[in-house]
Image (cartoon, rainbow, N blue to C red; front, side, top):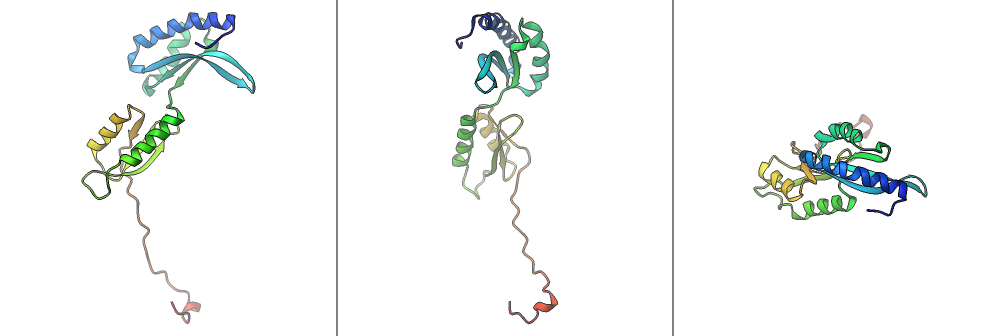
Length: 172
């Protein structure tokens, strides 16, 4: 735990075990709790108890239940968990370097990005391949999701546009 001023240390020490018990009773939330400094102005911060919820479906329940359990809800932050920038970069690089060669039996990766809301890595395949999608999601420990609809790049259509009347004497 970070070094806290005495009045904040008392609050965090009283509330952390309560939150940890909620986490133990609600394993589907896949939550974690840490005590950290939360900056609010340049050079200023206060100590807060941050609860990160990995399961989006459990977010609303956590936000309504946990503040009622703690003594200092003003020092509580219940947030949607997001992977770190390093984790996202590592997974994106791994997906791009380990994808199968184009033209094989297995789908290829057509796009890799990050969901702005959840922070998870999003992977789009060039065709539906349930087995490969499941392998990718399992190998990334829940930090990536394969989108259900394949993204097939469309080549531009070539067409011969009509030439303007004034261009009839210009060679092509």
